[in-house]
Image 1: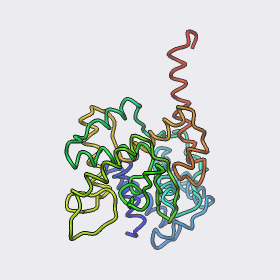
Image 2: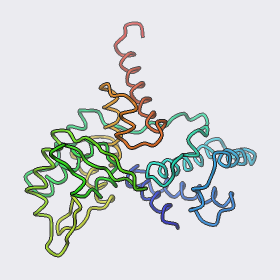
Image 3: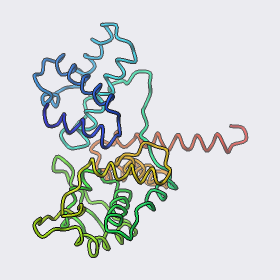
Length: 296
């Protein structure tokens, strides 16, 4: 299995919270797609065009596959190319404009503002580990960073005087993200009082967020952390690290931020990727209208 395919499969579990069965189905679908196109390994998928994807969909329909099966195979392809463009491995998403059939748009899960507050209040900040966890959650929600950007954040990319972080995404793409006052205060206290307790004299690292003994945190470990706090907060949603990124974007738009600014903050190369969040805000407005208007 090639490196990028392995990272994608890890992303499905750790950041999207998909089940092992779904992950295996996506892997099978992508291997079949790769084989049908005549590629020997999945690295060649970076060279696929929109026409090749639509041609593959046509082949599946001509073979008489059920609409649900075709939709699932397209979902795997779309998820793969969203990952590749979001992580900076590709500049453009060849699957972006391919029709997804009759199933419609799958909206990302988000937390309400109340649920975010409940989640943030779960870590025990009287302990070093709890204070670190609270700081990580505050920073994620304040910046909309990807979890990979958070766990790889280095000391020199934090400016607490100016209150911003330089997020360093894959593909060597950088962006400056403002840091809210609450997150900045937690981060300052963490760096001054807590991080020194987590470091180890035999491990010299400039990574901001550490486990005990100076070890670096993994995406899997952060996934476990956020799920545990979600259960404590009685949040009945499948929590992933990415859910705070989705909530960050949705709450900004809910409160009047413009789409271009949110695109820049998230580090999306294509605004069509950011537009998914407008579907969430539009749906919320429709729900409010339906409940509030006497003749709705």
